[in-house]
Image (cartoon, rainbow over all chains, first blue to last red; front, side, top):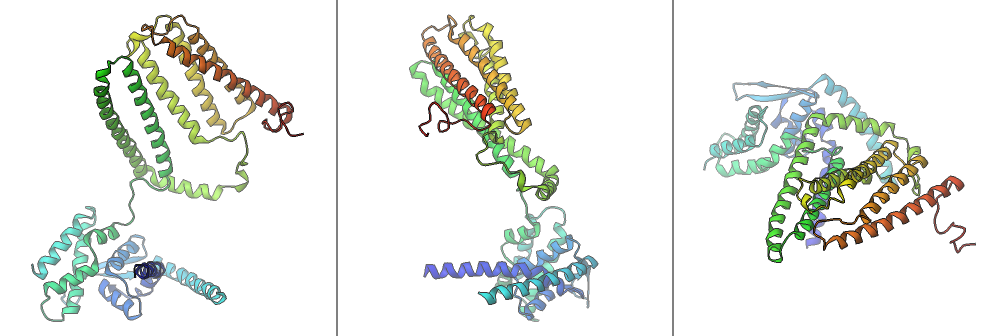
Length: 116
Length: 323
């Protein structure tokens, strides 16, 4: 029983690492239009990428600090203020490069895994 | 506790763990995100405390989410940490050696019933000194990391690019040095020599014990310590042994042997009389070790100069059993 739990924990850890590696690309790809954090989380979830709030929202801040995103506080439809994020010009260039990198990675991994 | 109270407390706790700069902005955003999530789940109804608690659990403990917002932090970075470890090992080792010496010397002047009291006082001083020096060194390195950390990181990157595998030294290269050992030797000699000399000076802790016969030899002891430190300094500068350095070392050791001989042949070491025999024994053994070491070093250097290889018992024409 304990062994099974350890196995599951290990799998969760490794699969989480795999997903975390793709997170930045996923986030950048969804911010060509302005979005606030919660909507972005929903958009990613609708595409099958479940991401923890404690991971996504600090990530948005980090990407903004790195110059890949721009943000602004906005009040829309008289609701409370929300911080909206959008990809920056630098982010767009990075997204293009990372997309090519991802596609190369997928091709390579497909070859490796087919061999296995 | 209601939903609002939960949200307020959560935001407050996270804020406490964030740096001043940007704290308010993050708190506002976090609150906005939490309320979005709660609204989505509660619909148009008023959120219950348990629903709010579920949402906050998904956001994570305040410590965890605050750490994510702060990003990677370290007191001493990965480039500097190995140097920090090495220097800390040297400093604490030298400190320990010094305190052991102080303890040993303090027993010469103690009566039996005060040995335990001496030890207790010594132990407190020793632990206090360890903690103090650990703190000083850690603060110093944290300061270096804070103000020069980026320089180390970029130097590490450029060192990575410039590194040439062909410069790796041979494994059995006898001229290879271990910088860590040489640096520890220098620091050890400076600290130990300084402490030793300070305690035997006329105004030193044990100055009254030192015989006037020894006083004229003290300057030679100083020169010997200084010469040993200088040789190690030259070794660091050259970054490997060379023939001339080995001859310099032999010269310095010969001088050290001479100073030891002077101490050994002095009519009196201390004013206490009885313990002089211990010192004579120590000096005698040191002298023998010095002489053997000097002879072996001379043989090795001459062999190297003649044959270009390292001397060992295996390839010696006289002592080797291999034909």
